[in-house]
Image (cartoon, rainbow, N blue to C red):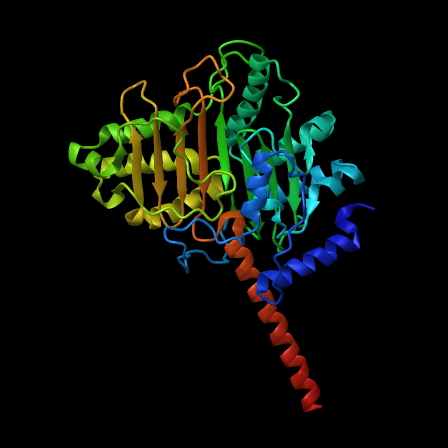
Length: 413
């Protein structure tokens, strides 16, 4: 019998609901294959700590997120998720489905070598792959879908460069589903693979699409099957445009260092609880034209999700624009390598030119041919966890109220 319909799934779902309401406390975590894989060991160490979320000082700023209607339908992604699951075999569904609050959410990794759960593109036939693409198209914008597919293609290019198709290929990307796709109950899906991770939480018509990781090595295919494919160029260009627009006084605040010798990203895999203080130049010190450049930069990342929900998120970002900071490491020339960060109570974006890993003909310093980016929702709402907490609290309260009302009727009788 499919995992979705099994007693194990429903019992596990009920249990995590109790955990989310605080009625049950647990520190036990399912075990995975950790021996000999340093990334998996780092994952295990991270999962040993309960989820808090990215914060500036270790404490969550509350009151930022609420369960409410977004006014944007999630029916397209709901229908696509149901169709994809229906296209899978019972065995594949068993591999891919987990309770809605399973630690599987937090097991993503931008590295190529971590053992992964779920069902991969390599296991899908042509019809199932089309169903997977339909889910991606429903949840992502046209731009976000194209970027995702191009990252997958460039992973094949890396396999060509290294002659290592055992670890690097276009199809080594895994889908998992958390919870059962529903109009009113929380659920979500995750796409996890080298340089591409999408976490997509749904509650009613609300969507949280973080953490999202996008990157590549190389970022431009100069040869091979996918010659000409390129990613991360707009994110690179818009960051440079913003820093180049700053006055000397503004740069003195925004630039943390002009020398970049290593990797600077702080909020990648295994960093759900990263403590990262605000740094750099506050958006309130920008001119109106510069604020538009900042918002255009943010939209490059937020705009990877479907258009309607991207607008909802951008409105949230603008609401906190006065508390938003822009920080930079590196120089500002047309060929410079650099790191930048956009950080507010409701969004954290990092862009980082990284040292080469597989392109060993390049010097061991940051290169424009290896880029990482990550987008998070700080203060406890990555994976929609703050919305999920509130949902369970409200559901629990409704159940208690109903119980009290029933008891009151019995007493009256």
